[in-house]
Every structure is written in structure tokens, then in C-alpha cells.
Length: 372
Image (cartoon, one colour):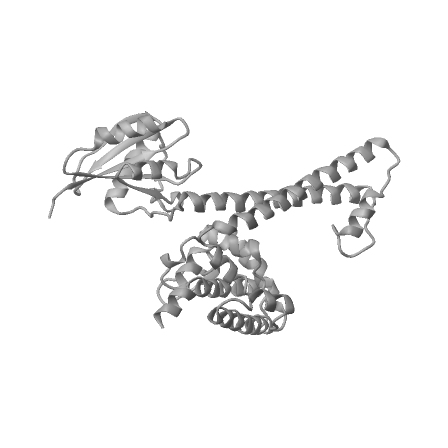
């Protein structure tokens, strides 16, 4: 067996320059600062060639951040390991008040050697492209919501109250365009607000169409289709779940997924005293949000509607069985929690936690079916 030594390289990355430090293998191995390099590809390649030598295995790491995963892919293309580290899980000393690029790089190298860093799952280029599309649509919806709130606030200040119930439908838009004000300046404000909301709405619609088109050649598209067999889970919810979670096989059981999403209760226990609080809210907030939105549909009795029936009748029987079992259990669970006096928001959070488990089961339905 070929013997080699390991060298752990910590990179404090930034837009223009990267600070580099390395830690030799062994508990007492030297930790030294190498210096700063430019962030361009040529400089990274020169660094790798400089540090690499026969019998040495280089292991790089850097914190996840706005620079993305391009550096990781570049280093791995050169034949070396590179881990992207979760920043929130890096151990920190309470009294450490000095932060510099050099100290950060040295700390990363030292902790990486000690095995104290948590590596995040990183998507491939195609998966990242789909995730960018999903997040762009989410940003467009947020902009649309903000513009609609500005319109409502403007109308409320001037006593313009819509007499109907449902807003932002055809009737509401017709009523909105028919409003008139005494001053032309106020009329101009309303027209600009309506135009801004229309642009945001059209942008969100274009991105939703782009998501549908992008799913045609995305490897995880079949899983997205199967997830929509669940009640309350539509295209955007299923696609968001898959682009943010990625490979569900990295979770050995549903409990790991629930904990990853921050849907498990927090706990502060000592001795015989057990104290549990609200959910931890760690992990991916986007998936947590779409699960909570879908969980509200389980307030109603279990029923397979016409639309859901025709959408899911071509899916494998195991998927349809999981979807129906989920609906039967979660609707009963919601009623039981509310009957015990739980607030509806608390009950919905509990339903969202279990819904994540059923989505995990559907995403791994092919493996389970193959194993039977």
C-alpha cells in the first residue's frame, strides 16, 4: 500500500484575494500561513502546483459564502479534495475578538485537520443552475408581494377600500384601474405602482415557465413529479424541496431530514429536568417555508380530489399509496392536535415535520421498491 502524508489547506476566500494557510498532518504538525493569492484560476493552479509534491495528499477547505462552489470544482478538477464548510458550525471561542484573513485561514486549516468542521453538500453545475432558477422565482414573488403591499397601503391612506373579498383577481384589477383621485400627482403614483406590480407579476410568470421547461432535462424531474402526488404539494413546492435538499440518500432516515430542516423541537435538559421549546429553525429556511405552506391543506378531511387523481394516476402504485397514507395520517393528526388545545400554527408546524418524512419516502420509493 502506498504511504502518503496529508496536508490540510485552509482558504479564507474573498472576491479578489484568498488567504492561504496549511497544517501538516499529525497532532503536533506545523500550522503556517502561506500568504495571499489572487482569486483568478491561474493563481489557484499555481498554488496547487506549489503545494503539491510526491507522497503528499492535499485537502483543501473554505467557508460557504457568496463566492459559490466554483473554487471547489476547480480544485477537484486538479485532482485534489476540497470541502465547503458550513460557517455557522465552525467552533468559536467566546473570548476571541480578533478576526483577520490570516487568522481565519489558519483556524480553518487547524480545525480541518482535527476533524472539527462540518462539510456541506454541494450541488453539481446543472443542479446549481436549477436552484438559481428556483431562487430567482422566489425573489420575484417577494418583489410582487412588496409591490402589492405598497398599493394596499397607498389606497388605505386615501380611504379606497375594495368592496369584494378576493383581491388581485380579474375583478380586483378592473376595480383598481377604475380608481380616480382628485390630484393628478396621486393618480400618477397609483399608475406607477400598478405598473411595477404588473412587471413583477409577469417576471414571476416567466420564471415559472422557465422552471417547467428546465425540468424537461433535469435528472431529478421524475422525483419532482412523484412528490406532487402529495396533498398541498405543487410544482414549485416539489421543485424547491429537491433543489435545496438534493440527494435525499444522504439522509439515512426521515429524522435526520427533519433535524436538517430545523423542524425538530429544541431542548435544554439537565439531570432529571427535561425542557423542550420551539423548533430549532436550523438548516434550510426555504424548504421549511414551503412545507409549512403545504401543511395548511391538511386542515380539511382526507379526500382525493379530481385534479389530484388525474395528475397522479400514472404514477407508481407505491407512490400513490404513500401519498394517500400521508393524507389520512396528517389530516387526523391535525385534528387531534387542535382538539388538545394546540394553536393552529403549532399544529401546522408538526404537520410540516411529518410531511417532510413522507416526501423523503417518496423520493426514495424506487430504492425501496427495488429492495423488495
